[in-house]
Length: 91
Image (tube, one colour):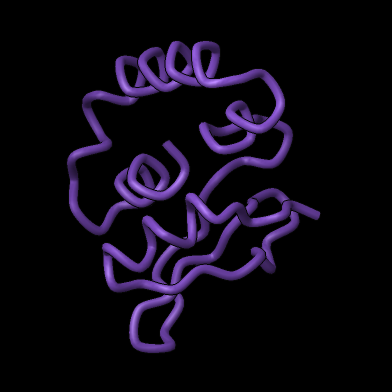
């Protein structure tokens, strides 16, 4: 089971959403707004920025973040999309 990091909780607060462990076995986090589920994000089996920070250090995490943002450039700016929440909460 994925342990939600403080970084993600802080980012969620900025976006005025709440996060919980996902009920979808393939995802890390469910995102809620006004107690209504709006998204399931973060594929299990892949790391994210806070996980890399914890395990590999800031320099490595920053490089992985940079590459993630390049890879998802086309979809991560669409507000309310799964890609948007993954970018904002996990990266």
